[in-house]
Image 1: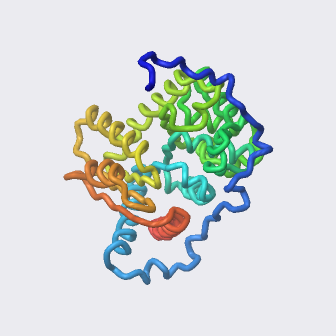
Image 2: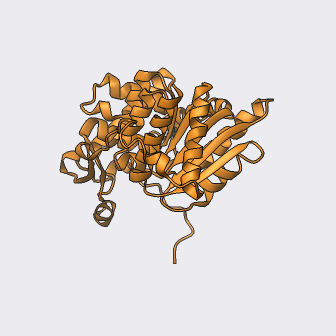
Image 3: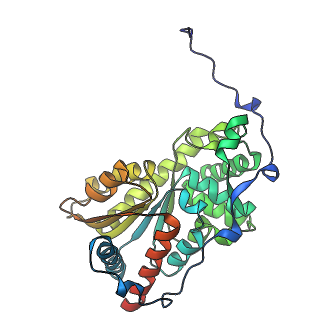
Length: 320
């Protein structure tokens, strides 16, 4: 029988760790996707039948382009899986073309961003590492994350901004593939939303939860300001976050509407591999009730997002 006395907290200084040089990974720079020119296969979207999800996709693309034409935001909520399956070059291309105006990531996204920018690879074998207790125990990743948090605390930055500044300042070898670094150079907002205990960095003694949480809360407030612009004719898409970002978005949108006295109007979409409750209600249906239109698309990110990007560039080119 388990005793009634609360056990003492684990001392993270005692965990066994190892260097990234000894870790095998599943995602490497050479596997990343490549943005297509808008004119390549130009007839594809015209050839789609005008029914169901094909109609929805073309309609969503049209609404996004209309929002951007009026200088309203198109903001992406990105689950970390989007980075692991090589979408960063395609997203960066949309940022450079002034189609995507900002990003929000969870803290796993920041981890993958740092590993990819500095190491050129990320995404370990969770099952193998869990079996022997080595999962997430790479020293360098914890040190990089801690450095970003320190920079955020010292400069009064959000985690997203601090990540971009850090990657660019350190001239990371693969920094050109970093969403955060690209956003910082382009002057676009990136917010990172932390959940303590959900990510491997919480396993390390370098992790200072208070510093990280404060920087992440600043990003929440920044996202609330972005949501105010989205709620005035903008668009937002959740790509592969099942829980954290839909929850954060709903709260940030609530703050924006609490402080605003204008009528809400926005376009939202959720892209994921399976149907999830929170993205459907917190992104697609609740925010758009009497305030706009929400869409839901099911499919693998490594197929659906390049398709979306292709359609956006094609439509954006036509408008300009």
